[in-house]
Length: 286
Image (cartoon, rainbow, N blue to C red; front, side):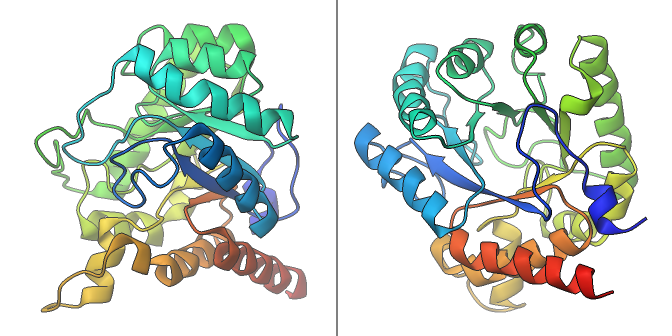
């Protein structure tokens, strides 16, 4: 099966003839990569529109940092951060994804114009999430998740990381299906960096074909993550800062696109937009 056929289509979203590029807008003061830069609503909307001009196909808006050790914001604060940005981008015709673990934020974001719910807990953090998304008929990202990362890397022990992630994602997808979300509206995400060390992340990237066998479009979110810092630092050096990992991110984007990923989620869009187009051109030449 070629990568274009593996890539799949998500009902309720546009169709792209290549791996899609999901740009990130963090409306937070404490994101690991760009915390505080887009905390103001006007700045966040402007940044989202800039990402589209750089080549983003959709924009993922989040109001809560999920970096290791981050403290959760309360519901009212998350809504205050996210809803105006979602509404502002959607009103400009942008395909918006909302990055949230709260059903209330998902519901209000969908009402404000969001087209996709990206829940890093796969619906585990809030029992109301799956019913809410099912009732709205929205597409849903199911990420591999083993719990909140407060206090460090939670439950990051694996005998066989690829098999265990595939099995746990399969079980979660079955639960989401049982909750009423249609199979053609489910996207899976291996959860790079969540309860995983660098070797785990690299193993998962080397075996994206195993994740594709789950039968749902695949989102790969490697942008600026710790494992890239470790790769770039080598055995002795200090990892470069998050914002100096964009070339490495683009390399992962090309690899993921070549292996049939439906979309890649990135902070810096231009290099990845070029990378996925090159990957598509290579596919077309085979």
